[in-house]
Length: 112
Length: 116
Image (cartoon, rainbow over all chains, first blue to last red; front, side, top):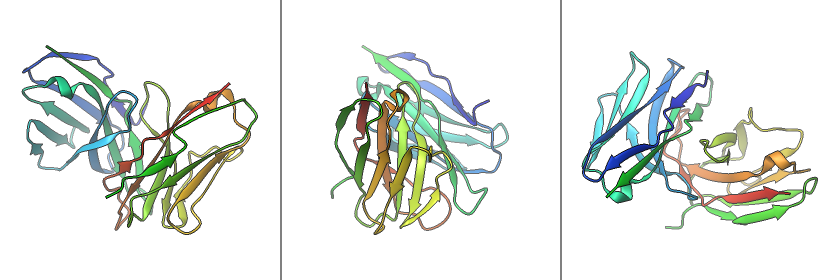
């Protein structure tokens, strides 16, 4: 089983709709979490950190569920420009230096 | 402010040949990462540097891959000899880290390697 898992999608979303997806992790010692966005043939770019209490940045909301060991990303009022692959990153400090892992990504396609 | 710089952007080589990638991180960033990304997969960490020290190279195939960050600034990743399975995008990222946990990373545009 992979340590960080994501539904690869694609999630086909009508413009203006809401879409949400999760990222599950297996290491209960995981301590920091991020969502990155990656456009086709481009580098990943930080979308947002995920805080324990949940956090929002405009149309994007990230949540952390430690009990069930997953993070989620919700996109409201989807725009065509939101079409991308969304990568989660999970890090832990099981040794002196944090171990980090990326998920394989969830593809979102926003359609007109 | 300049972002993470990588070169070359594209490289095509024959198998068994050597290849090297260069990365210059964002000024002031003490942590540098090299990743490999295959199509349809997330980036896989190859090596992480804190200043000059390689603090995590557990995923680096040491029989053919090597890396250095001699002055704690720019870094070079080398493959010798390259194999067909090394075809991938090699990403460099940097961050400013004050403790053991990974902070926000900023990625360079990557080097797309094709081994024929």
